[in-house]
Amino acid sequence: MADFLLPDLGEGLTEAEIISWLVEVGDTIAVDQPVVEVETAKAMVEVPSPFAGVVTARHGEPGETLAVGSVLLSVGEDANLTARGFSEPGVVVPAPAGPVDEGSGNVLIGYGTSAAPRRRRRSRARQPQPAAAPVAGAKPAVISPLVRRLARDNGVDLASVRGSGPGGVVRRCDVEQAVAAATKPVEVAGERRIPLKGLRKAVADKLATSRREIPEATVWVDVDATELMAARAELNARRPDRPISLLALVARFTVLGLRRFPELNSRVDGDEIVVIDDVNLGFAAQTERGLVVPVVRDAHRLTTGELAAAISARTAAARDGGLGPAELTGGTFTLNNYGVFGVDGSAAIINHPEAAILGMGRIIDRPWAVDGQLAIRKITELTLAFDHRVCDGGTAGGFLRFVADCVESPVSALADL
Image: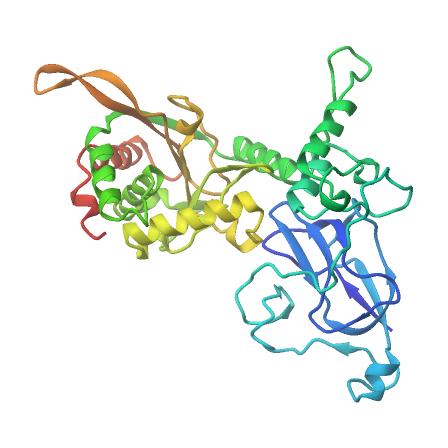
């Protein structure tokens, strides 16, 4: 008999919520087989077993939160495996200590493989229930993790939802209808209470920590982005199969600025300022789960085209819920394009423990003086919030002015594309 403990799932994560079990008590499982799907404050993860044998107990139910190191699964000896020489009598087969089959992809701290993380298909196919009224105790037919997440975030019991999809599969619209039906005043007319947990709680905790610990200051400047818009249009006309976003272009200017003003690519550790050599660029992305910050590591080593591709890939993965903890942590500077929400400026909160965050507002037509003449130009506002402990206004202003100059005259900054 062996107990499988909930492993460390990433940087600083101490707990995870059970989303769904992928095995039943009595099932025979193999080493590296996914046994449970959990959600941390960073991502949803399928957790593979380091043991082979028979599942004798599952410790926890869907919706329950377990601390790292808690018993997750108990696995006993499988006589068939023993007979075939896979284990000695009374011994459960553990995962190998070193790298195993490169096809696995189940990488978790403490065990696993050397392959890059990727989402696995579940080894046990789930058969959807017929389209009928939910039966007490029956498992709901849910395929999409986004549907499960939507239900969980709104406190909807999927077992009580009638699925309108093929074979009774519960779809997003079914959950949304259940949410609308369940949203009623609580104690006071017009009031409802939403649990602060999961990703929302993680974001809340980080923002509160930032406000408590970082003495931030803010500088901003209006910028003529007319040439930037023209340069982007010309670039994308040359490479229509690999379009470059405005965020990617500003990200390129940001990386160049951080190489000139490295004090902003830093963090405060006690009584020391730690200036970081590598630029791991985070960028804010709005998803159905809420706001997440994917990270492009070693952004300073990438060309503009490579940086654009990395941002595009991580944005798509974030919206699909496919980013792992390693891709959502370790940033050294954050970029936020809040202009997509139709606003001009924002007093952004620094992504603790980083030292600064650069924001970009919407780009709109405004009257602008050009060579002494009034003209209509494409104007945006850039805003930099910075930790005043790591630098003074001269450094912050110099960085912001450098990025602004790149926006106004982008050709030289894009020479490496």
